[in-house]
Image 1 (cartoon, rainbow, N blue to C red):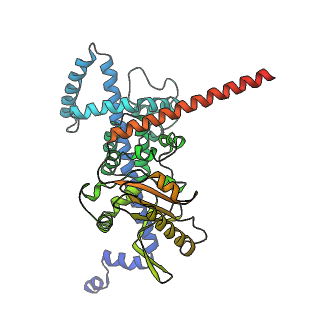
Image 2 (tube, rainbow, N blue to C red):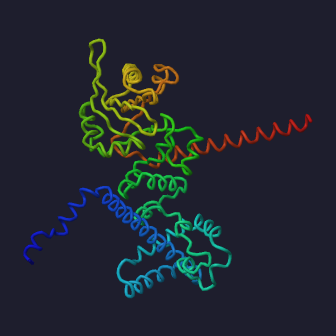
Image 3 (cartoon, one colour):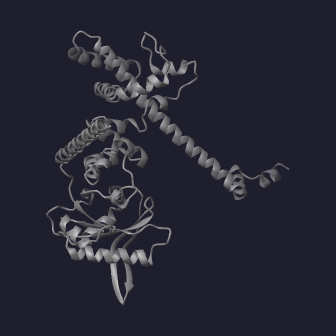
Length: 406
């Protein structure tokens, strides 16, 4: 009897496989729940770590400010605190880590303190400088979410990069983009090193530049996807080496993921050397992408030399063909981009009619000089602010004249 039972009895694995045939959707939902829970735990752990370092930084700064000589006292304090924490808690609290915690607090304290005053009632924090963790845990309003107080949306390693960006607008831009695009630390470093903020800013009008720190990169019009220059240092091609357009195209395809990151938001790759035929003649578009945010095709032609008017005319034909024979009625007009080593804005303006969705953008095979781009952007912002002051003054004069007439 026992042997018959064991023969008829299925193993747990067999039962799971058998059940999954009938309950596949249920099992998938459970898997999805576990993955979401793990993701939540990861985000919570990142936030907790950032809050911990922020609070350590706050306590260090407040203790240093109470010392007789802050510079000398600060050096001794960090070393002694590091030794004490290492003995009591273990590794992970070197002097360099504590110094980073202090810098983290000094960088983000102004914005967080403003949020804290609005979220916590007056007098919540007692005179013995208890940490905010204990305040939140004992709040009579109930537990206040850490995310309401602290705006940290990334991991500690990301903030080690961000807090070293001196310009607060630039720092905020990279924080927004890293969060939205889920950049890894390596991708964040690459985008900062390639001067993404400056390149996007210098490709936009001055009003749009002022919104980058609040909104990040928005893609609403075809021109919003442009960067000048497009930086292709990841291709590994030497700037002075001789290479053909085919070599450049092959290098882009080999590094397609990095190229998509450089292109920006919403790009999906469709084809290389996309062929179309009319009047018994064959034509090839180097690269065809689709942008899901703009809901349109984006055609890219690669040029190894300077831009010629014939190149613009050729792209114009490609764009018109896609608009008339490929795009559907619910899609927006096709965008054409010519990537070249050197462009002339005058040639582009004279060759193309107004309103044509065709753009020329230079590319660079090495990282740009960030200092030069920052100086150019600062000059641009200064000109914009001066213009705003002139407009404001003119409006005041007009209002005074109107009052005088009355």
